[in-house]
Image 1: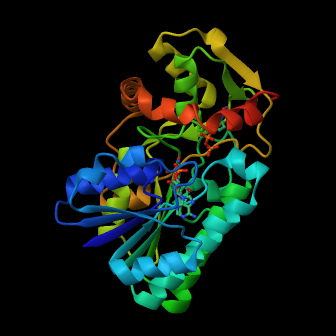
Image 2: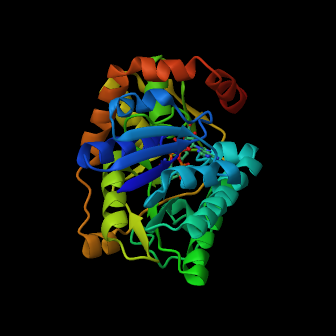
Amino acid sequence: MKIVVTGGAGFIGGNFVHYMLNKYDDYDIICFDALTYAGNMETLEQALDSPNFKFIKGDISNVKEVESLFEEEKPDVIVNFAAESHVDRSINNPGVFLKTNVIGTQILLDACRKYGIERYHQVSTDEVYGDLPVDRTDLFFTENTPIHTSSPYSASKAGADLLVQAYYRTYGLPVTISRCSNNYGPYHFPEKLIPLMIVNALNDKPLPVYGKGDNIRDWLYVEDHCSAIDLIIHRGTVGEVYNIGGHNERTNLEVVKTIIKELGKSEHLINFVTDRAGHDRRYAINPTKIHSELGWSPNTKFDDGIKQTIKWYLENKSWWENIISGDYKNYYAKMYESR
Ligand code: NAD
Ligand code: TYD
């Protein structure tokens, strides 16, 4: 089987490339990635040693580049991770989110129609469901929860999901969609909560917590996301949506305090800053469908996963030091210095 992983030089796509190469020695895995600020060839270092792996630099929103990918590689399966993925960046600059997340998805879907495909899988997010009240811990997102977005990021991901479903209904394209909760683990770009806090704490820099830190996220170790996508592309029902999550809800403040404790740092580093505009209160997934239909359950509990993640950042300093010494400095100054 030949699988194209778009966005495979990013956080989850990179972990998925490693997961699939380790699990299937007879599959060809091709990473197609534009190498934006979030894409990193160092994430793929191990994969590049494998004879079953190939990297192609390309943009999903460029018809020519996508069509030559299909013509040259004739993939059986597309797993689309490629996206602009950071809510805060989408608040400052929505346009590129629409271009990559919506138009890029449409261009991939059109290529699938033109050249044929066994399966197109769209990697989506629980953020398309909007948010839940913090005081209603009995409520969870199911696959039937209406789409109700808050940020330009989630709106663009929802637009993509709707297109994927339209291509199934109108053209009979064999698609599946997964909507996962917040991931964490190795190779996570340090603009997102967990890696940003680990990296800042290691450098004894302030830890910027938005608002009161009482927003809740449902954390999933990235390898568990990879195993769920692996199951869906092999055994998921065409046309269906699968929610992915492991019931690991934590407030942001709890997460930050856990990181501080693991690293032996002081809570004085916590710095409460202006809240994010439109900040979603709580995400929480009901994963019953993927559990009962495909037998998926997560392997890693948050308390173990966060320790493994911190250990990875301690052991792979050069990976993140290379990031934070580059353009990231400008991003950090713009986002946080006058917050
Ligand atoms: P990321 O930002 O770390 O990586 C995105 C990757 O896509 C990068 O390698 C980047 O170079 C590439 N890319 C961006 N624009 C591209 C384009 N036009 N053409 C080709 N490649 C392009 O993102 P991530 O956190 O790994 O998220 C991957 C996917 O999973 C996204 O679709 C995201 O919406 C979804 N998702 C993420 C989370 C999470 O917690 N991070 C949770 C649920 C779903
Ligand atoms: P993030 O990792 O950006 O993921 P998302 O917004 O897609 O859930 O943020 C996770 C939570 O952490 C979110 O409630 C915003 C909050 N947050 C902070 O408090 N400080 C920060 O510096 C960042 C990046 C996020």
